[in-house]
Length: 426
Image (cartoon, rainbow, N blue to C red; front, top):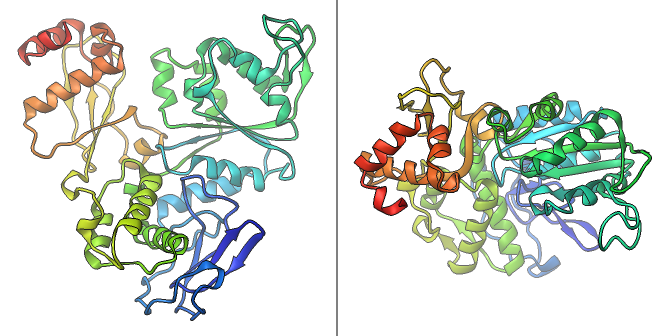
């Protein structure tokens, strides 16, 4: 196994999994598993590794996604990686979609490393952390005296990333009044600093990341359609972990070896633990799986049983709350999905796409990452949860909540009364 260190990668083969070096781990994927091999004994304590444990049976078919930083062999993952590799050499911007914890920034790093400017800067900016007042200055820079406190001229993130890659994480959170300016920079390759008169050319590849369905957001007026079409021309949808069930044991074994090496202990999974890990739906995806495995490695003995993991199998199929295109009709119907996804569907609208496309951000209509778990709940309780969720997501506005659920305001208010929610929401 190759493990990173402060002085570079070192070769360690004390596990049944051989791993290639990863430049870093960002909570998405981990290093790529290239083959499964019999353990090679190594003296205890070398490179901080624990004593070797007895050999364990290898998976029947090794993974074949040959990209550093990626573990897995599922078809959905392979399609996403193959697309990223094909897109990487071109200078075009890319939109990477997927749920939280699926490894979007890792794909951005892949696009940079295999892109036209691999030696250039790699700058990542989280749009949700930009204040509305200073967002334009942060992205495009400002001239001296352009606003109170602008004592000096300052370059923005676009200029800092010139000759390399600029990653705009959570692009769906960018203030809508700033989106036309971003669109102009993407189309012209020139920007104007705040308070500036002239334009400055920039050569930068923009990789936008989002867990939102930007098509749906644009239909609701929360994201500009012209910017969406500019970004979505070249997109990559990452699958959620629940669509890569066969990869879960590989990921879990790698994370367990990682944790055991850090702790200097021996750890292994019992069959019940691997079964429970594979049965869970992982709403937090690979990041959540890593945290669960690391926690179990710290708190459990040498053999980790299913009950040691702290996850409920009965809660392993969440319902993703989503919204259809706003309509004025009175109907409110639910279409059952194979993965248990629930979303409102207006009359005449096409049925929702497959779960993989929804979770990956490519064609679904999920609004947030909230989940409604069905175990032990009656139909009336589920309705209450959905209506309260819609109100919470829309700031208490009944009109917007009704629109999000695809029903009229009068129907929404009537059902609120019948469900006994009126005293709770005022």
